[in-house]
Length: 615
Image (cartoon, rainbow, N blue to C red):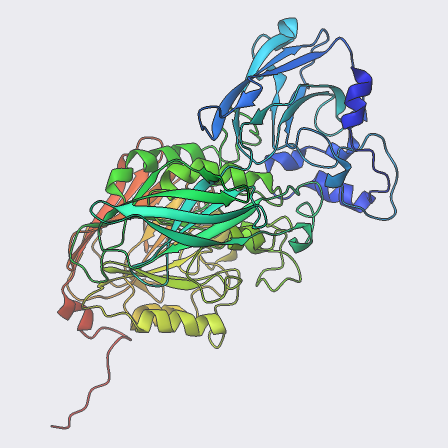
């Protein structure tokens, strides 16, 4: 047994100490960053037995299965843990060659995709004989379970289980809808293990009363060299598979469509996904009920309890489940940055797309770029931090579609019925005179408020107002340089609402301009526009951010809890705002806006059109 397991191990010398240090330090609070896998020592014990079942997964077409891991360890310890590895064989191909450093055997060169402490089962310390349950998703490779002792900083490998695998590990999975550049387009992006030399990807789609159609899909991927630094280039790397995007065009408005993902193999057979449905967008300006969900910083959770560290993303599953529960009353979702908190551990992107699949396969799932997607030194990001873990935007820009002119510049506009959304990229310079500033002004200036009265600005970082603790200590109550350039645009073009993430709580301001409330109401706003209402909605899942003890007059409502916002436009004159708790779905804060077209046209401070006295 011991010799067979040794064959599985990656024996690679000459990893640099700096690479190991990067991993040991981790990136933020990503749970997998706590594991110093390069320091693993071989301590195989023939008395340790691990068996995973079932060995064949997805026999009925499932893309998620529960696996029982039976553990027998005669010497249980409180710091024993299970690492879940995929591919199952520890392969030297996962090792990133470097020069210098020291040799240490054995090297396991890739992080597990998840891990769990054995004493999470109450009987482990009593007998060492327990069954742990893991939720496993299809990630294009087989899976094994390894038992380690001595904690996560200097792990000792005691044993490895049999491998388990899905019937078709390459199957097309996890579709993500997004609006196209035209109102009558819907894009579908999905993940598979099929490259274009193996299979031709496409979408088959239809609506009741219309003939079925097929639309081709383009295929993209990225490799380790696409990453900008560690851990994404090193211990966090995992083959991402292939991403296929199809554009469904000339859709009829407000119509339910059925679709499925397909791959024509070179042997003449076709691989199909299950069937999905979506409702196409309303015509821009159409007068009908339209419902929008907005949140930021959700991250991902594990339903089997694995990967829990520092209570880092405890609200993620609650937010996901509440949105799924309300899905029949939702038309579009905006996740405004900090999507997965993978921080350079690429396996977590699959985990995230699997978690949101019930939502993203049914309604457009529009995203924005956050610091944990983009930031890395000397890569063109506005901030020189390391929050992306070396990803520097590549996975987000490749795995999700969004209607930007340049996917590397994550700003775009999109219309949905009576709404115009201007989505900014706070990880690139937005100040006056920049390319992005010109985009923002053009987006705000070109909307026809007669047909699209509800004008929404979105960014990840707080470019407006927040009483978050660190902003309060700086005395700015904003991201540095945040609103100085933009507030005159919000006022000039009469932006109704501005939404931000980054700060992990909820806060709503009064209608505000230049740090002054311009309307003293709290629950209902009507008549002439006077100022933009700013909303922080970054409490969708990641650990909560404390508020400053200072509470300016403009801060109307604050909530130190997990939640999300729902907007409901009933018609061209009525908009309902609701902030809901992720734990219960109950409304914690709400208000209404009632505004006619003449109220949008009316003159107010710093937003008056030029006039002349000439007849």
